[in-house]
Amino acid sequence: MTEISNAEFEVLEALWQHYPASANDIIAKLNESGNSNTHGTGEVNQEKQWHDKTVKTLLNRLVKKQAVGFEKQQRHYLYSPLLEREAYTLKESKSLIERMFSGKIAPLVAGFAKQNDLNKDDISALKSLISDWEKNND
Amino acid sequence: MTEISNAEFEVLEALWQHYPASANDIIAKLNESGNSNTHGTGEVNQEKQWHDKTVKTLLNRLVKKQAVGFEKQQRHYLYSPLLEREAYTLKESKSLIERMFSGKIAPLVAGFAKQNDLNKDDISALKSLISDWEKNND
DNA sequence: ACCTATAGATTACACTTGTAATCTTAACTG
DNA sequence: CAGTTAAGATTACAAGTGTAATCTATAGGT
Image 1 (cartoon, rainbow over the protein chains, first blue to last red):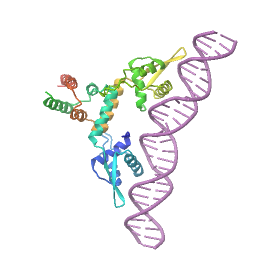
Image 2 (tube, each protein chain N blue to C red):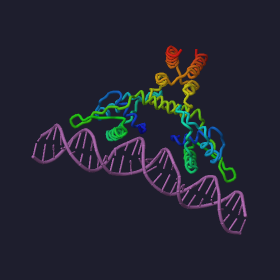
Image 3 (cartoon, rainbow over the protein chains, first blue to last red):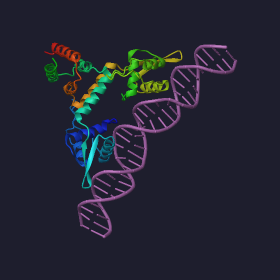
Image 4 (cartoon, each protein chain N blue to C red):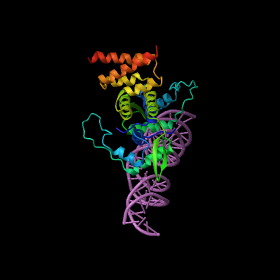
């Protein structure tokens, strides 16, 4: 499967949140507030506005890339993702970790730790993952 | 700073391994075996061959992007990274985690766990990170 | 002092990406 | 039924990318 670009990914995100969806549903979802600018800057959500032509182009590209499928409904299309979000994010994560950290996940986490980007919640989530892992692999 | 492409990143990798370095040093390093195809497939290292013109183009682009600097040495250049590897990989990791996992690192690790992509070493590395973190944050 | 190999600079070129505008056709509106 | 609207298809277009080839100037060999 060909690569999915960043903009395409955002469209896919909207679709994963709710599908099947018409192009207009997707455009609306993308332009909803709440696709947050929560980067800790405290700025008002000055959301990017997605132009409908842009979104439709991206949908077409996703269809060509077989990342999205559609079915005719009257004269409209209803789109659905053909990829599972989890599979996709895993693939991308592995690819990044392979390229940057020789496939090892710990150095990535270590980078976060070093920059103080881990909080108590992150740590307890990690601990719980680890104990699950240990439950299954002893 | 502008984005660094995948191919550019590979050149930077070679440079991070040893610098300052001439273009030829970098080309040689890129074409060395051992920049491994260790993806667990057991295939023979059928290394990508980097064409010298290609590498020089990429070096130029990196210089334009201020990711790499150089100084004249006689008539040659000696290149050096202007970015720290660690800072760069952290930025990229954070960006991916922001886009795919709402900034949370645990879901990424969870994906790996689910796919059986964690082994004992990974787990102990993570545990040790966690205990360090706890030592510093209690 | 000339010729050549070579380093770096410049140019090339197809493909992708972000971002739309225009075209075509069918459905709704009056 | 004719005109307008709107959905999807097609086209656009600049910037970035991967991958080089060609150009230019100079250092080194003979």
